[in-house]
Length: 423
Image (cartoon, rainbow, N blue to C red; front, side, top):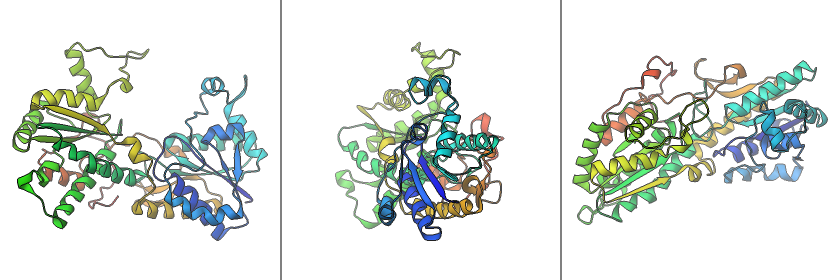
């Protein structure tokens, strides 16, 4: 092996810079003779042949990348199979196949191993590219690292960046929650990223509640002046995987509003979509649909819907909807993620030196062992298991009745359940 290439793609997550730094450090440690290049802006840079070679000076400074969020080499959302979009964006010329353009560039750059850091689309696209090259007698090992704050890649136990994003979403609300003092009968809606998976919302709520309880042990609460834990705690958590008796939940929250003068809820951006659509149709509110007659989810502002609906039922005088997504996904990796990143990247380099391909992660169908998971088994959309013990305990502590899974998930194999608060 003479040369490896790195790229990051898709949305941001708090692991990209650290993954780049960890890979460079590992190669420098065990195979310093291997040349490293980085393609700028994901597959867009690969299509355009824009890259930089890592110099000895850059290798010395790679450790400092752990201090940064974002990606030092930039991201983009490019689907290689969408020829029309690549053509429209000027990434290819008329008659060109994006895969062929990428393949030609990798061959020109004499790349032996391609490390892709992204979600399921990023990594399966890389696997497809490797297969394409194999058909043209060019061997390329592709080793993916799983990046997504939703933690929804199957069959991985934990993706990189999700733990940090959850922690940062909690930090975001630690400040926003003081808005309950801005107005009597205040309703705070914290909308968290997660269109199809509630992991980030659930874990954010877990982290927030845990730090609130810990803070209460280390400082005095001034209950007579309105500073007490029940007022600053979470009163409801809503994710796409759960059912919800809306009338009963409004009644429960109304009692909390009457008692404490505020209600704070965490909501996934994809929570209760069937219920919301049915409610909007019943109210005669307009729904934007695509060519197939399906409601366009990006036109449904879930946080605003919850705020509007709960506001009336709870008798709120003011509603504040706040979104933590861009704040949380742009942070540097925390200690928990750094440990995962170190292990994943070390194993990724070992796989590269052995000539293996796959997505690095703890495989829930292989006793959660760290391995290079076959790309054909990788797919997105893994739901959050609301029966995780830590989530069940969270709902119990905040007084929210344990919900049931939506019907489509009742027979889903979630894999082993970790009973601890660890990932």
